[in-house]
Image (cartoon, rainbow, N blue to C red; front, top):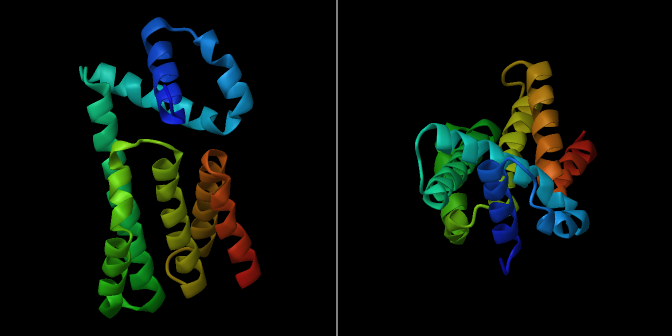
Amino acid sequence: ESWDMGVVFNAAQYYVTNGTFDMGKYDYFLWFPNNSPLYNIFIFLFRIFAALGITNVQLALNIFNAGLLLASAWFIEKTVQVAVGREYTGVGVMMCVVLCPFSLYAVLAYTDTFSMIFLSAALYFYVCTVKGKGNRFINLVMFSLLVAFGASMKVSVLVLAIAALIDI
């Protein structure tokens, strides 16, 4: 538990196994409340893994995390398609290739990777709103929900909301 991820992982695993909060982690969550949403997500995922009979929780979490990274890359590609056209899809793919070092985060299921999906999906819905693709109301609601939930995990997601306000 020398790193935040270990503390959050072990606290969630303790909760799922014992049904109670590990009071030994109380001070950690008191000092770092930004990790509470991830703790709750881990509990939710660990319960699903248990219901599915998955015993290697770390491996399952890593696979889920890699899926989040792939979904983030997909939203980046779709955002480029909406913003500048289908013929520039390669630009979106190249952006993901340039960000390839982030794929090393796949084994670290933490706020950095879990918040990526909220940022890339929110950007997609914002660009759809600006470009008039789809229902404007639904796009703005999705943008707002994604930014709000993403910011609960990583405050830096709010930078997108600020940029959108400046863009308006």
